[in-house]
Image 1 (cartoon, rainbow, N blue to C red):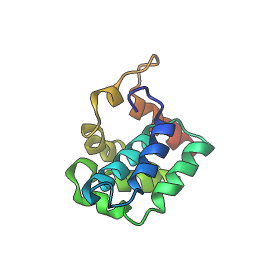
Image 2: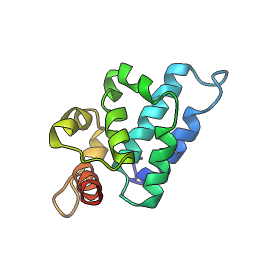
Image 3: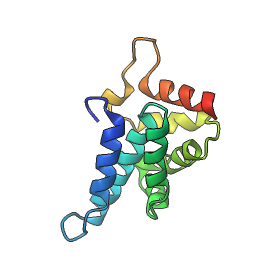
Length: 125
């Protein structure tokens, strides 16, 4: 995640979120799912991201993210990305406020990581 390898981070966070509740608290597992959603949304568009989005989309706990302030918009944006629906700027404002500083970096083309990801997504949708 910190190295901007969002696709592999999303996969790893999702794997960790499915760990046994004997080893990790349920709240922490749900937070890992939220981080998986964040990284999947920020990952570059393509078939691998679509596959990761699909795994997270099919996770029965996805709707529970809405109950956590930090992740309350994640399920909506992830569902729209998975279903290839257009994402508007107003939907991204709250999501962007939940991002960590390294996830808000401005790239060489003048776009943030999130803006680039959404532009790529919306062009395909």
